[in-house]
Image (cartoon, rainbow, N blue to C red; front, side, top):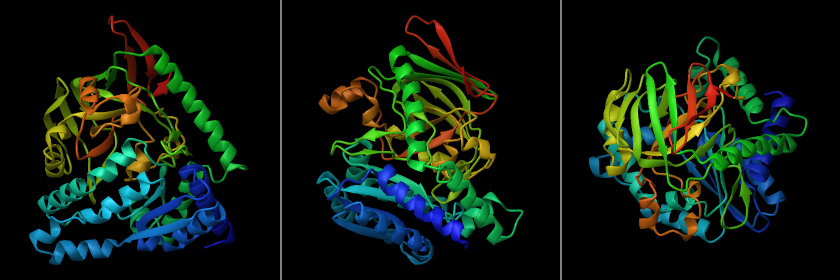
Length: 410
């Protein structure tokens, strides 16, 4: 790799720790990622210690080890997840630590694996990591997810070129969308976040009762939770740190009301999930619940997903993203939710983010449910926006206000 690549990778590492995680002096940091990400992990460690980290713990995974488990493990092994480890990580975060997750594995890693085995493993993991998931989704700790280019991912995004060229092209896209190539990346992120916060502030002022999405194959009304709160890129965690949970990020998002979603919706981009790719998703909602679901590709995986638990057929998030976002303007299909959800407006089946409910820390679980919050072991985003999608805000009295036309803010 060239010296310019090495310089940009170092800048991404520093940006991820300083601005993404928002690491505080004296914090412990857990870094999670595949063993193939080791060169980047070491740069992250260097940045963290320079910023005053007390300790940096690395949790390495291994895609090839995952395949070995599926190919050779018995049902008990495949349906097992180390709850003791997730409990330890959750405890560290509740004690004031921070978390950084690196994404970039092979989107098609499990395409040849029996979907029932993948579903069993995923459910076991979600159950074992429930406490850890709650710590993150309730904003008790500062955290961030960042990308790393790998050959398998790069070739899926750029199938027409050589592997080396594909990796170079994917890194160029990563550096551009994470604003690493800006003269001052930290200042660029501050300006970007301020613009997203301006939009979320407007939506919070309007307090729409619902949103209506219309487009090819889509006529969906998403009722919003009572006391919903629009959030955007920056998050202030309970430990006082300010972080940007996703890099890149282009969305403003809030909590749907669990029982007030009606209509039909069609996905506008493929969804990479559990090592497989789903495409052509079509879903019908009645009173919040998915009553019909199909997909042109990966339908079995979709149906298993929505049967994970009682909350998997309900929405936990709705997000607005303009078609002109930095990610969308690359005109690439990333097959990676971290990117693709920031190229289009989207919804998420499953668990809601508590931070998107006003005064959530003072509400009991029963009160949160009463205001429309959904609970589930899953949280899966899929894209429903495009340059052909319109979005209207609908007030409690039924009056409407255009928010997006042809995928752009009005």
